[in-house]
Length: 150
Image (cartoon, rainbow, N blue to C red; front, top):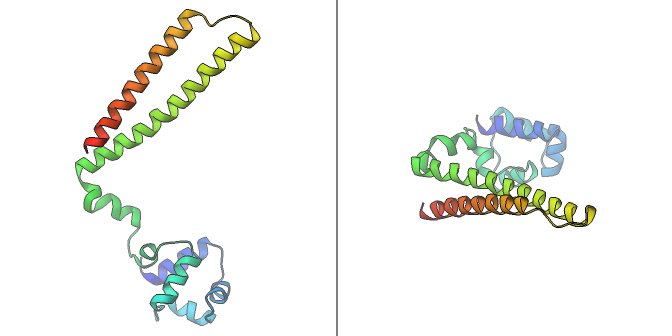
């Protein structure tokens, strides 16, 4: 995708007409039309203003490939070590979210027994939740240790 195609795509994503974009950049509608048709290119300062107005980076604006495709298919992102690190980070996020839910449920159960039933939490419940909590914390620490070595 060329610069002109990107300008048009991002302008349409923002639901702007050529005239509205031109007004924001203090240029004519014909100028925006020429940029989109690739018969002219914006100067560097105007391109930066254009990127800011369209809420995209300069790389996204001028790139002829999708930035996400570049990250996946080229450079450091393609190495096995980096992919493994990204998988571990994703697993770490999921584990952290699960631990938050697990902890919330644990607190709700304890409060339910303490307040509603006016009794102490059964030992099986305490042992089960504590054991599961310890296992989750150990798994999280192992993941963090592996991420630190990469």
